[in-house]
Length: 146
Image 1 (spheres, rainbow, N blue to C red):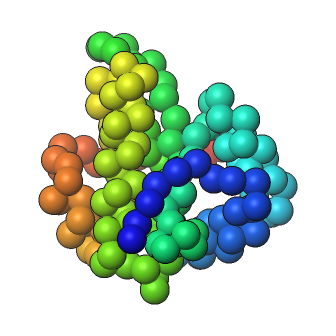
Image 2: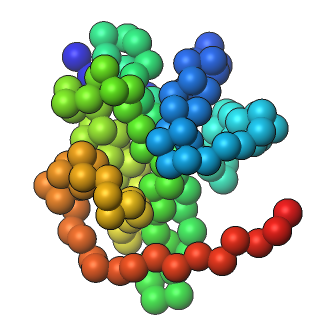
Image 3: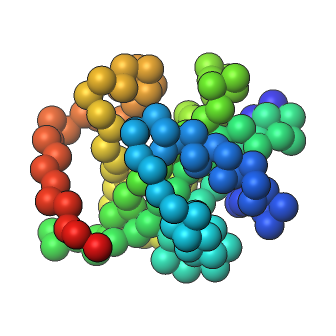
């Protein structure tokens, strides 16, 4: 059975394992300080938020999200990261995480929830096409040196 709740303090190592797998999927490498900063933010739960998906009590997925203002209406919620353990896919964890973020955002007075994914991420897009509307936007990005 899939349940959704906040990340607990004792989820730290399993969350990081999953987050590192997510970063690997997108070909990104980050230092341990990034994981530390993110974990602190999720525990504070003020600017950055996280939810956990559990299958029979075991952490199998997460989502990271935040609210930001919109120039043309109420605040919106950006679902930045979503990942489920490959062994748990197809059991409803990602769908439940998206629904939980949407419910959370609704309670915060947000106008919508949105996210990006790579065009080639066909497995995820199969679900996304069922739970959301593809708006057709194309993402552009400027990487700034640190």
